[in-house]
Amino acid sequence: MSGKNILLMLGFVFCSNIWSTGITFTFANNEFTENDTYFEFDIMVAANTNGTLLGDTQAYINYAYDAFGFSVVNNGKLTLTKGEIVEGEFGSGLDLYSIISVLDNTSTRFAFNIDYSFDEPPLSFPDSANAISTSPVQLVHVKLEITDQDASTGISFQQNLMQGEQYDSSNNAYSPVVANDIMDTSLPITLNLFYTEFSDDQALIFWTTQSEINNLYWNLYRSVSLNPGQSIQINSAPIEGAGTSTQPTDYTYEDQGLQDYIYDNDIQGLNTFYYWLESVSYSGESIIFGPVALDLTYDQKLIPPHFSALTTSLGMNHPNPFNPITSIEFFIDDSDRGTLEIFNYMGERIVKRNYSAGYHVFNWDARKFPSGLYFYRLSTLGKYFQVRKMLLFK
Image 1 (tube, one colour):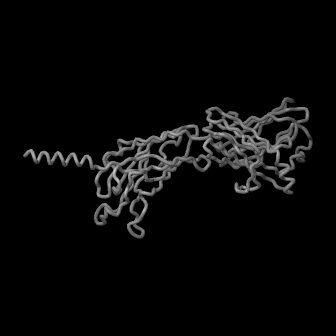
Image 2 (cartoon, rainbow, N blue to C red):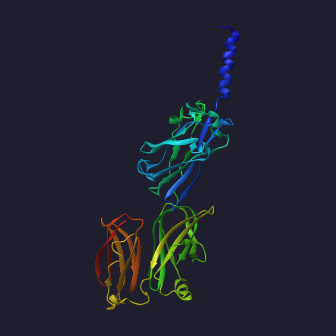
Image 3 (cartoon, rainbow, N blue to C red):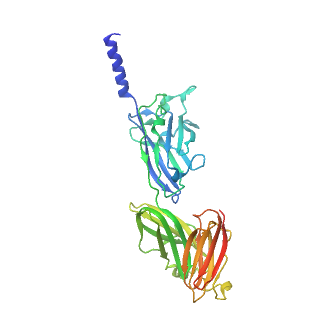
């Protein structure tokens, strides 16, 4: 081979390396949605050369099992939708791209394959594909159902499996393939309990967080319906949050304006009020929890007829079975003090409240607890002791 030919060949190889087109995958726009039930984010794609036409692509995404559970595809915890770069039609009803597979690659990794529909005979039209720019554009949108809010997401690409799986619309492989972005985000506020009760002529709201991330303050809202748009804010000043904490934090708020609201609006016959809880972060983002219901079926300034004996007694919860809220009535003699406790079927105590003498209704919101048999117990200093059963059925 002549020296000229060798130089030409070396020049061709050198130029090929310079002009090979690379592709880069990244994460973006992550957020928590639907009362922190879901974690959503975008997978973005960019090329190192403007105008390259996207063909078939395949991606592998790792995630933390303690945040989302195992095998999110088979367990119905993953929703994948096409992004901007894979939208469009070749003709009426002929999508340019389709998601042809979404599967569990391992118990903690899912994979998806997007196919360009017109890169092979008999319909081979590579120039009709969508062009990728050097700026990231949305490839797909991912929605994952959260299993454990105390965990971190642990989301990353499995880059080695994505090599040789990315093609332009003429079936040329992209090289290099860069997919080293990581999104190990702490899940936000973990709300263990949120419930209300009416006691000693007061409407009380209680909530407990297991952890908080950048939580600046809380707001509380009350409504006469399940429509949050009709609610009004009841706290005149922000209720200070715990900032960032991994320790449980208990909160109590007295709705001092409820009685005036009832009388001022002439709604003494209304049975139920609803409360929403808003968390506001340091960056101004908010998350809404609720609603929980406060049941004023009885005029709670009066003792109902079935407690007219004015002796310490524990009534049956109502409704029973229930989902997810039930009311527990009890009366404590004037000279006594008592404690109401709730236990699961394993005997683990999950609620404990101390009460002074008088008639009380405790509304238990059990939406954070699994279906099953529960026990509630009233005990007093005067040696009253009564246990009853109730059934949560979801």
